[in-house]
Image 1: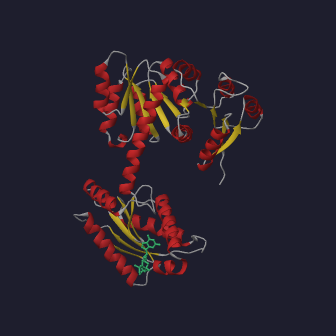
Image 2: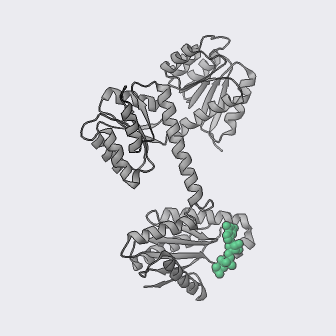
Image 3: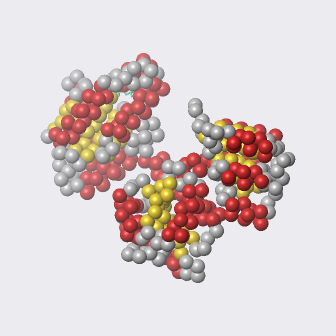
Length: 412
Ligand SMILES: Nc1nc2c(ncn2[C@@H]2O[C@H](COP(=O)(O)OP(=O)(O)OP(=O)(O)O)[C@@H](O)[C@H]2O)c(=O)[nH]1
């Protein structure tokens, strides 16, 4: 596996170097580059063409005893985490003001794990878009710099209305940091509007409230913000709150995925397929189209190549479904049986499935170059319950199997 992110570890204790080397090497992403003194770090950083994703620096080195290495690392614009033996409040503040990401004391194994966690977080943040809604350009810039220190991808809005428009047009925005006092739409109204819309339920929101206004913090939380920060805030607190809110949301989504997603195919599991299907039917008075698809002779594949190959085949089929039907509800009904549901009229739906099966037919899966064929039953009739729609599509699927497999049978 190619590990592309180099982490410069500057530390004179061989034991600490060994531990950090071990922990960083265990991750799938990082390659540790070790230096035992200031001079070595200087030489490594001076090499042209070398890029470091982050550095872990000890303050007390044999040839630089007063944290000089931090200035060296920061002068090369490399994010720096300080790992040190002594905790000193004044020093900590001085370092954080310089732009050090975190200041961690060496007090047991956990602290080394913590350093690696901070760097892993940096890597994940690169894919996270944060919208900063704030009318003061100075404050906006300050928050943007703090977020970019942690490698977040920052988008800006100068008032609540622009923020709303940006969120509407870009669903990849994951977090909103919003001030209260803004022209056109204030921060509080913005949060309320967003939380009324089901599309923004997973957006992480942090409100900014002015000093002395205790009621406003509570108002933000009641309107649906995940957290708030009182201005002026210290950047260490800012980072802690941003990361905590984000991690709480990520945990929630992981739990939700575990409950709703089939771990092998990454499609909706049967329970969530029924739940979403019933809702879809309630929301669509004109009815739905539903297809049941079953891989032909799958048992033979398992018997010939083994269960593990069968599993990778199902995994690959899951990916094909996700890619082909991003606009439809797709689930694993069970075993090698899948279900696609859409608000599309019968013939159009059938044409789309036909095209999908033709593409799959040309592909070879796994090392065994296995080719796949499906039997499909479609139902587009108007029904009262989702279960009925499934039952009728299933009947058509059985008919497709009975008539020789590798075909679509529909009733419209
Ligand atoms: N590898 C693997 N096999 C599975 C999984 N779930 C179900 N199966 C297998 O899927 C096969 C389904 O067999 P059958 O119901 O006889 O269906 P088939 O062989 O596809 O035959 P037809 O549907 O009649 O074309 C069985 O061998 C199951 O063990 C799974 O998660 N992984």
